[in-house]
Length: 333
Image 1 (cartoon, rainbow, N blue to C red):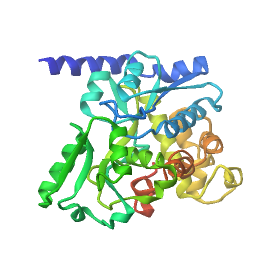
Image 2: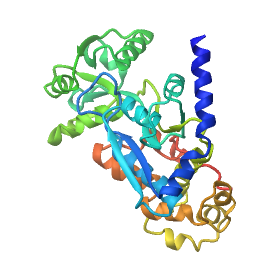
Image 3: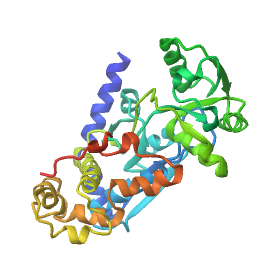
Image 4: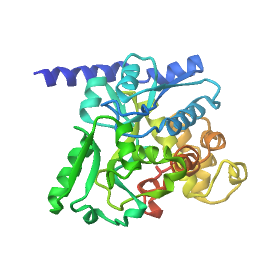
């Protein structure tokens, strides 16, 4: 019975939200956008590293798509996902970027989810000097994890399934775990790739001493969230992300986008406004995508500027589909 009431409440929220966000943003020439700036230490709620810089760029891209300018954007960082989602529910922000999607979250906060802007995954980090190259090398070795967290449980399940006996050191704080890794008390540490990479970056001169094993134990997309049922706004969010990915696939960058508007190939014409069917369907200016790319660069440029360079992360799952990653554009027609 409770479940029915929750779903009914979600549907009611959707009906009320339909079209309101886009109309409000245009009327006020202002977009409030939230990002998730995970705390430096684990707080019991967060699992990802700090992706707020990437989230802020997505906020900027959506604002430019709607308003032709980033001047009306206000970005508010939140310390964890629940705070960002509560702000969205309270109508304090119109968009929250950096959310882990789930059915429970959708119903509890009355939100819908956009397409992934980042794919995180649980990984294992080891000291390069250990010469461990895969999970089997952890047999009878000590592995660090945060106590009572999904990564700790996932590690246990994976090692049990593979028949690999290991010892576990559980820590209540991220700082404790990082220190144990730094002094080699643990031969390895497990957690989300972004969080481990953030810890590694904090090792400064010794950051290059630590590497990831090739195995990925989970797949955890990070997405934007908006009020459930606000389809007009949600479509713009999704197609803006798609345009950033398509621009990278076509080699269109922040530097060459003006020149690219003169290209005579179909995909570039569809993206940059010669064929304005997508713009017309979304209710945007004909050259909306060109303006977005001019403001933020393509997805690859955003990734490198906000995440890759900062955390020394390879593209991995966040590479284009043509390069073995999961990032795919949406058809601009």
